[in-house]
Amino acid sequence: MRAMYQAQRAKSTAVINKVTKQRGAIRAAATQQRQRPSQSFKGIHNFLDPMSPMPAPSVTSDGKALPHTGLVSHDFVVGSVNSTVLIVTNTGDSGTVGMVLNINPSGDYVDGLHMLTIPTLAASDSAGGPSASRAMKFGVSVVNCSNALKRGGRVTYLNSSQRLPATTTIAPFAAIVNAIKSSPYRRRITGSTLGQATHLVGFPIDNVTYTTFEGHRGTLTHEEFYTYVFGAASGSTLQTQRRPMSTVAFIFDPVTDAQDYSVTIRSSMYTRWPLTSVPGQSMRNMPTAAADRKSVV
Image (cartoon, rainbow, N blue to C red; front, side, top):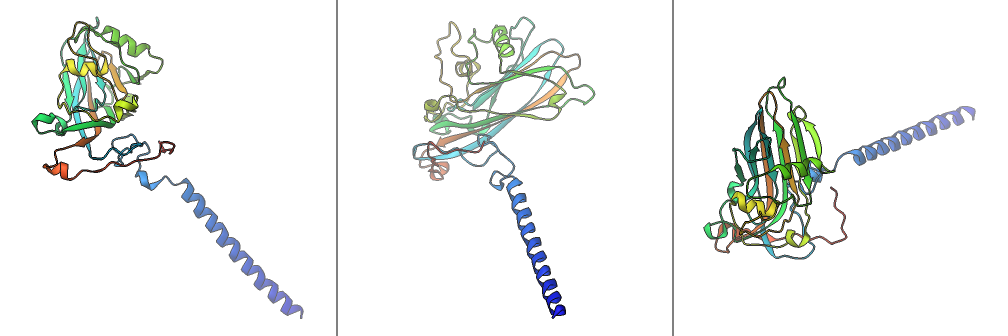
């Protein structure tokens, strides 16, 4: 009897140990699954990042449109005398998303003005471009491509929901530079930090403008782009345009050793095309989401 009891007890103990190990393995797998990042984002955790393939939904149904994402890149050099200013935003109704220019120590425009326009959105509605468009996303990446031993200099950047101060056309720029550098939300880094690309993502600031379709203007001049970022310049005949998204500004101060920088701007828009065109036949209903739905950003 004693031998039978001991055999039965040993068998029961083995079963209990087996079940315990199985439960432990299940708990470990569940914990690992909870800690694993969501696969739906595919490594992109910011919903407003244009590198995320998911289009931004609207609260109400806005009919059919074609999500369009494009990019533009530009290389520039920061020298030892003049500062370089980079301004980026998504206007919502044009393919022009930024500009780069050089200013002297007095804040006056010198040279190097370069408008940044997405090639696939450069044409206006009357020249083969979208018949209408509205803002969705934009992001800007800046990297210092200089030799690692020469990287340096001071860089100030700001991602602002406020409009930068208006000024006269092109010059002077001193008031704008001072406003960016004195903002409590600006950040100061060095050119060495930009040895690894810094990526900033814009965000909506005006819900009405953000969700409104306008006739596509294609490529903007620097005066027209000013009216979105700074407002109409004093003495200008242009009108101040509403901004759907924030403005990203970089100021690169002069350095002893010239610095080679590269900027890449990605912008996403909802576009509408004539029904007789291929893009027009590819349009689908825009996704919608409840107003109280929480998105992971």
